[in-house]
Length: 385
Image (cartoon, rainbow, N blue to C red; front, side, top):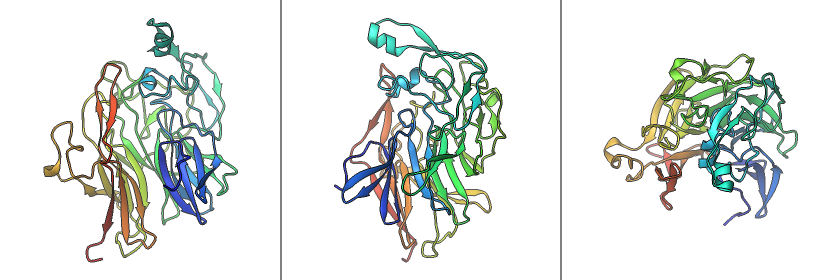
């Protein structure tokens, strides 16, 4: 064992300036002589999503993704079912810049009162507020450098933490390309909670400094009020923000619930596909994140940014899949690719596959069931090497 003073989940490792950087829940740390030293703490990672992949920019700074606390900007009973509302009842989303809210109040079952007083009731919550707190129209939420749903950056020693881009729901993959441009993969919203959003794709973005990418009021550059995002059992979502900055458009979209994760670039003829992007997708987590059991993701794709095309690179053969609902459990794999990294010489691509995970239906809601020992690391080389 190298180190054990970590706060799971561990979402990325980065070797930079002879140090191993670790992105783990709420912190960016370095490993020094078998001990973990924290560089940045108190990141807003105690909700649905966490701080994610790290990448070194041309300026020498370290960039990383910070996911949102909630599905679509409002704390609701779904966050209780995901396990964090009870231990962190005051936690909510934080904006990257000052925003003015329309002041709606969204009604939800109140599981905290049910636990404490054994009686059922509902409670109303406004966007960017803790559970059960409402605010009037025109309330201004101040921006912060520790924003949720953003790309953050810091100096290599952890100083000068700042917000670089905002309005992303869960920017899991963050990587500077050989073209000296910053790219991010982003997970779309789910049809759950008190502000459900249906049919939201996952995205690949080109990240610009100060850019706004639409969350929580736009999906893939399209207003969330569009009928295509209307949930089955309710009206189309309304805007939360009173005014919007100019919204960016994605480079590419993927099926809803694909769960795109980390990004890597091939930089060597020893592997081939020089300059092209590789992206992993860990697959859907329905029925935890969707009303239907619909399979999406479970792959590594090769993306040619010059032509704007994506090609399957690694995925399970259809004839090797397991039975219905266990397709990516009863298989030799790959099951759920999450991490990508090229070797130092660029001749091999390593793929971290976290293994089999399914959601089981229970009385309190969908419950994840992992299968210990089913995770693997795949090593892929060019034929003949």
